Image 1 (tube, helix red, strand yellow):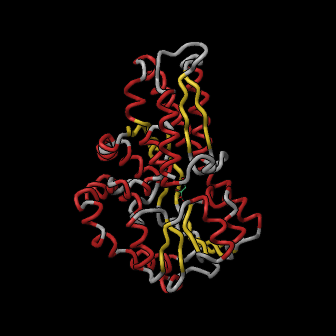
Image 2: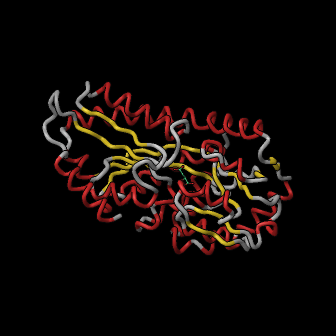
Length: 333
Ligand code: LMR
C-alpha cells in the first residue's frame, strides 16, 4: 500500500498548485470513509459547491466518499504524502499519528450535549488542538459534527456486565480501547469500511457508532439489538495538506476559507436532524430491537466507565481533561 501511496504522491506532485488557468483548475481531492447521505458526506458536497462557486471555477473539488480511495489509516498517510489534499477523519483517528489530545473527545459521558462540545471546539481548547496538527504536515481547518454514539450487538446490552466477553469493533483510539476493556469486552481496531462484514460474519459481536453511520452502512441489519446510550461523541477535524494550502494563491485560499466556514455552519446545522432521521429509519426497519436504557442502567454504565478518566489522564492530558470539564460545566442545550 505504501508503494501505491508513493506513486500516487508523485503523480500528485505534478498536479500541485501552479497558477490556475481556465484549462487547469487546482484540484482538491477530498477523501472520506462514510456515505454521501451523512452529515460529513453532505458537508463535503456543500464545501465542493461553495469552493467552486467562490473561486469561480479556479478550484475543482473531487469528493471520494465511502473509502473509495483510501480506508481510515491510509487516508491520513495519503494526505501527508500529498496524494489527496483534504480529509475529515474523526477525532478518534489522530492518536496513532501522535496527536493524542483529540482522544479527549472519546471519553464517555464527558460531553453531555452539542452545546458543551461547541464551547470546547470553538474556544481556545479546540483552536490550540488544531495547531498541533501543523507539525504533522497538515492544517486543521474546522470541526464538523456527526453526533452521539449508540451501542449495538447481537446481545441485549443494558448493564456493564452484559458487555463481558464480547468483541467490539473500535476506531483507532486508546481511550476507546480502554473503555471496552473496562467493561470486560475485547476491543478490535478496524477500518470503518470493514465493519459491516465483520458484524455479519461474527468476526466481532458489536460496535458503537452514530445512528447516521449505522443506518447508512446497514449495521442495524446485522445487529439484533441497539441500545440508545449516547455515551460518547463522534465528530471530525477537516484537515488539508499543509504544503498544498500554504502554496495556494492568497486570494484562492481566502475564498476556500470562506467556503469552509459556511460548509461548517451547514454541517453543524444538519447533523442532529440527520441522526434523528437515521434513528427513525432504523426503528422503522424493525431489523434491530431498540433498547432504551433506564436511568439506573445508565448510571451503572457511567460508574463502570469512570476509572477511564484516571487511567487515560497520562495519555490524553490531565490538564486538558480538567480544562474541558471546566469549559463545559453547567452548559445545557
Ligand atoms: C468510524 O470509523 O466509526 C467513524 O469514524 C467513521 C466516520 O468517519 O464517521
